[in-house]
Length: 426
Ligand code: URA
Image 1: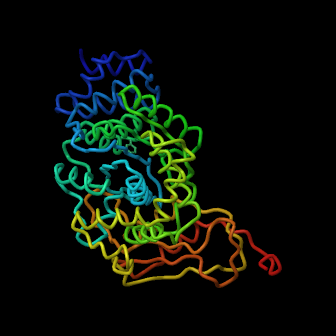
Image 2: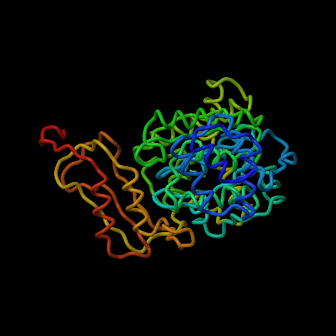
Image 3: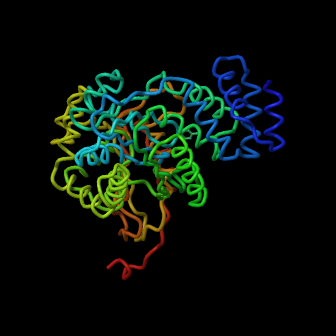
């Protein structure tokens, strides 16, 4: 077997055998197959795709390149949720405690943000003292005590994905449905929860730009999950506009806590209920209607907030933020953008707002950069709102950047307006 033959087969759309895919993944991970050969194969996959069988084989070879967690020490049925990433997505901090409050265990490993999308681990690190690098035994212990924990992904999980993803980023081979599927699913299958809910986003703030592509990715991930013996479901959700009104690390924790306090409704709340209900139904807790009612009650009763508070405390974080969100990091500088005339908001470009937030310091372009936990954007509107001239549209925050001109222009240009006559406002 050799890498050139394998590259040629994919180039000619000849299906690879399972052992050829294993040879490629293992050879690349160990360093025997060089970057240039792996890059050529990845580009052939981008152009010609892979069959379902090949995608399953690739995912399992990547999963098997490192540790596979043994979650048998967790007493309850385990449910994991993965979102394919977006802007303002703070759902993990809400649905984890909400599902745990309904009797399932949610052991989650998450990543840091890169580019315009934020990472759950960065958001949690904005809580002073919160430890994301908890060892496995303590992680399992916290999940057994509270039902929920989020830590950063262990370096021993999926070393193949780590190496291949870095190569894809520098060779223009990220946007391939089978490669995205294998990358996400190998990590999820290595975490090894009993059930897996996949929230596949589409829109300007997401990897998948159309609902059709998101559905294609979701269906493929479901098939791979089921082939690996998991209870697995994908749902497709809209990421054309940010989820909720806050973008940025501590601002998103604030919004998540306020939702758990029962103060936030709207699209973010509705999606959290839908995701939680699906996690519960996958875990066999009832029909989707019963699980929806359970999810609503978990938040309304304050039980989900109690679980979040307890988990934050056990992970060393300042759990007082669950009662007083003002204890989260606050930015030194702020800048309000006002409506230029009487307008109706007709669109919001989530990706552009994510970029504006990154310029303010909330994100990073390369993976070792520091981030500003207090930086970000708070939107004062929802799509369809009518705003009068000189009323605030959004507030930009930063602890590290005092000149707001670049971020403000980008954020302003992300909003689509329709000009109103005065009478249309009333
Ligand atoms: N997230 C991943 O982990 N991998 C991809 O390829 C895309 C998104």
